Length: 165
Ligand SMILES: Cc1cc2nc3c(=O)[nH]c(=O)nc-3n(C[C@H](O)[C@H](O)[C@H](O)COP(=O)(O)O)c2cc1C
Image (cartoon, rainbow, N blue to C red; front, side, top):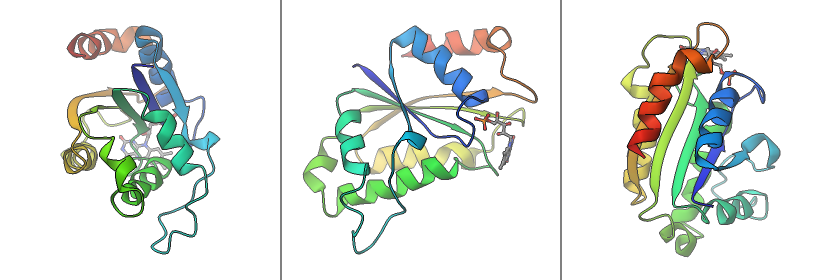
């Protein structure tokens, strides 16, 4: 598996999922739907260390390129994705050796939203988190979807994104 798409949306079959399917068909990427995993909010006491987060990380670490896929909800990543990002803190506290394996991975962000252009505060947490963990933030593809996602409408942007990889 060269590419892992980490997908977190409240709609398992919505706009972001359609974008994920399109990208995945072009890259033969493996999709990890965060809703399929049972992991909880970051816990300072790490009582949740045996939930699905670490097994999920072990699977994702098989890939060299991590693509985070989220809708824009209130100018931010989805709540599912935010919990995943918060749990990355486990990898710089109780699981440092596993955390070090993230170093050098390529990171991209793909997203959908209603607005024509996302504010910079939307993508910055992903770029800065990648930087903090020693990963290389590469590309950001945003598809504006005032209604349903349309592959035809977004094809030029999608091709541009795929060509940069
Ligand atoms: C809770 C919620 C908050 C949203 N906030 C925004 C927003 O801040 N900016 C925006 O452009 N679209 C916003 N939208 C619209 C979604 O980003 C858009 O419909 C997206 O394509 C939905 O993807 P999904 O089908 O994967 O949920 C919001 C939608 C929901 C449900």
